[in-house]
Image (cartoon, rainbow, N blue to C red; front, side):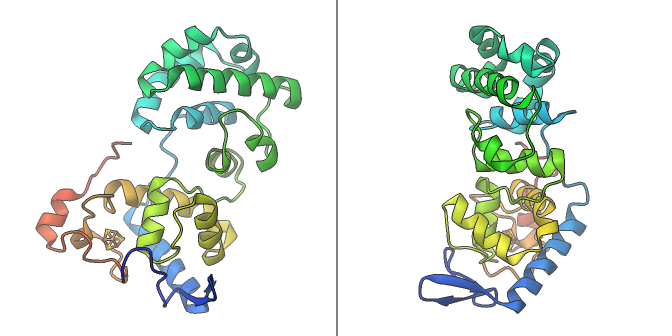
Length: 247
Ligand code: SF4
């Protein structure tokens, strides 16, 4: 099956709209169970202790790596422990602290703007609501779902580059547009699994199902319709597996 085609075992197409089959739901749940066995530690890799810290770290992770974000956040959180502290911060001082994550002036503006909105509209707390979260500067659906799922236990599919790519390779969606991909993936999986499914797909994308050379020969998803996109030789594929995420 070519990438970008819906796997007929997962969905059938009626007109332009893919329709999820019972077999597709069953297969998707089995895929999740296999990934859960492969990555028992799968979780959000952004270091945080509170919803506010997770919101800040997720805003910083745009166009950056989790590792880089985790390097700058301890100093940032120490200097600005509350939303009120960050709301009153000097933008150039914040930009200097977060510079290694890239786009520092823009992200500093997002952080301070979001903190100000938290203080004026939400009593300095992070709201548990998608609409309220996406109204914050620098916060899109992806960031909001990370915060809702990880900090508050509200199920959500987070479609980042890894989730989108792996889902397309599995034939779960044909869409590159994150909102449409999110709708397809959510239709396949039980709601209660959405947040952990996102973590598992991200971990798989970072460790085996790479953008360029996926480690197909070392991948436990034997039913993947894109198997063979990367090397299937176990030794070659094994050398492509990353034990630790670079992101
Ligand atoms: S078989 Fe290959 S393309 Fe399919 S999920 Fe595994 S690594 Fe990705």
